[in-house]
Length: 214
Image 1 (spheres, rainbow, N blue to C red):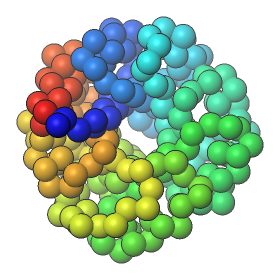
Image 2 (cartoon, rainbow, N blue to C red):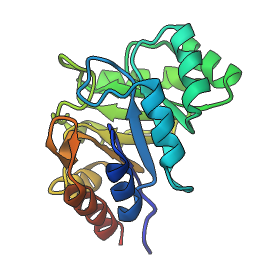
Image 3 (cartoon, helix red, strand yellow):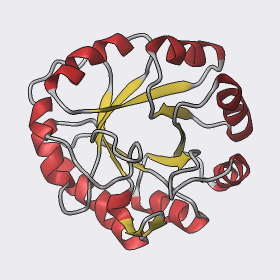
Image 4 (spheres, rainbow, N blue to C red):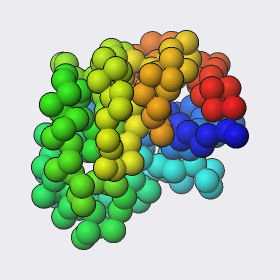
């Protein structure tokens, strides 16, 4: 019996990349609204890409330590299915956004040690999903580095979850075997240059996940 593993292609900036993700069978695409990122899109660009996205492909808007005004403006302008917070946001803030904005909320956590996993319980009731990622470096996410997947082995998760950080078409099956993840999230692993998505790599990544699931 095959397993349903969700696939998020993050950091998309073009209609061609969205089409490639849809054609390859991704479940989610990520739009990054964070100016230091090479994958940054303005709220106007994000709204345009959102309008261009085919039905059935969910839009995840990624924010990093955005203030309340920007968070509200971004959600109202882009109308994402999910908001993914990728900074030092607190469970209390996530809960406010989730309840007042009526939007699904994800929280990315950089995994340096088992301690981070143990402390992830504080997001129960505040986030709909956790994404375990490589620890933040100069930029939070999209750095192409991976964390120690063995830390997730036999961990008792209390929230839906996924993994990110350095996932590529070549290593995603290994990551799934090692962690049993319900979702995989890639960005730099399907690029030809920082911020430039490669349609063939997107297709290969999704195929690798499907092959593993079956």
